[in-house]
Image (cartoon, rainbow, N blue to C red; front, side):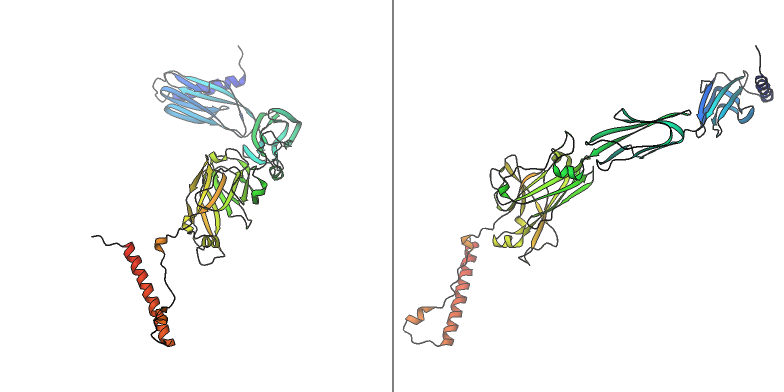
Length: 440
């Protein structure tokens, strides 16, 4: 068996260490564990590698890097060393454990140039419209082979390049997986993104998204002869974000509606129809007087089960309230659901006019458990006949026919006033007695 000069030198250094450590008494080291177990190790220039030694008995542990002592732990049961080199090459790391029994281990560490590569976008999951496709990039510090995959199908391959760009060539909405593989002499690395492609505004407005999963256009199938006003508003709905749909037509009593979704939905188109009569899909009128019938329908099926904090803002004409003898407090928002009208409480917003100006509106806010056929109603105040006070405002004509002689103008005016007051007091007295009977 032959030995190289390097092996002889290592053996000499280890023997010298054992000789030096022998001067210091140490207990038996027992069993010793080295980590990692494999003798050959590899690491890049921008990374580090950990080594450790543990013994069941107190021992003296010395670390050598290419014959140079770099760390030592005396009278210890464990020791570790973090290997990090910025220059590529091959290094020898040695751990020497001394006690009643001497042992050591040598690792050969191969340091390779760092694999410098950056990917963008930083986000793993992306969402954008089909007309705003994301740009995926891979930038490498040295010439590399770059391969792109769309839904695990290879779509592009480049050899010996430093920078690579990929833009998905798709025309349908849906979920896509984009992956890039980079390979060079220093190793290989992959990165993967997930892209949610949503429809463009023109696709949504036209009722198509370019895929079989399109929800279609917003249509209530209402009789067009009953529709006074129709408005459509489109918004992008994100999870746990309050989304508002606004409507601006002056003939539309609904000014806006808002809600929070529990999931990411994407673009939603909300249709609102103001009707001149009860909807064709409603079988009965609500109990109170109807201000307007309104249909509210989104273009996403099942949206009702995914939203919360729903609020609908609407206006009622003060003139309509006055003309129909309706108190603003009795106004309600009603939804026809399950073949019956479901009524929701409302709140008058502060600052709304309730009587000062008959030409203005009173603004209300209500909630709902779903969408569909709505009715805004108010309760007409019924005037009871028992509460009507009839006052005779005419003069007493009995004097004129009694033959008592002519009466002066002044006397006649005084007599008329007295008769009116008597009539008022008498009527008030009768009404008071009627409402407050004496119990005997």
